[in-house]
Length: 202
Image (cartoon, rainbow, N blue to C red; front, side, top):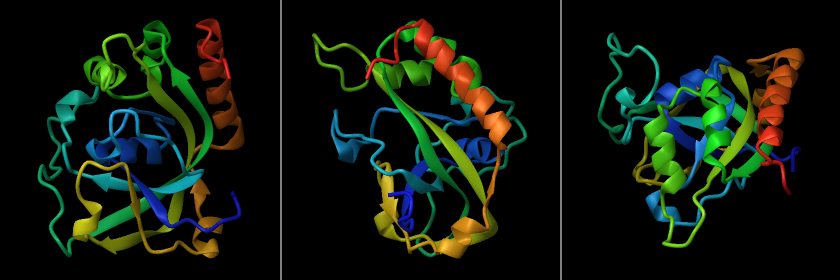
């Protein structure tokens, strides 16, 4: 699977894509989009580009100072250029059900607690256990920013979109935003947290 070329992108707020792309965050916590159904979301691709979306973006829901931000608040217009700067490879995936373990991961992402709690409880039926999917990803920066014209098919509340095929050379020339030591150290800290809360069950 890792040898396949990449032609899919994961939609996420542009502010999160930037945080992943500069190595300040390597976790994605997700429940799903409207078109995927209550139980439908899966981290179904091993590697994917990061598609920076403005749709539903709310900078007040992240823990950074965004007072001086000039990010547009509306979705892309047809033909507008989307800058694809980063791609990611999944290292590990966990299905988390203990809120205490999710709280313990707070320092490893920038979302505020309420939005993670909303995702944790989203789609829960009366007798269901709340849960959320967590993926530890390794982010890479493309050598050149890829410019993709926005099309209607990229819109809506869906997590995955198909893009033109990325070349093997584009992947090979990209650079990991964290070196091997930094990523290994980060992974061990997260694994230790999840192990403590008994979240490493297969």
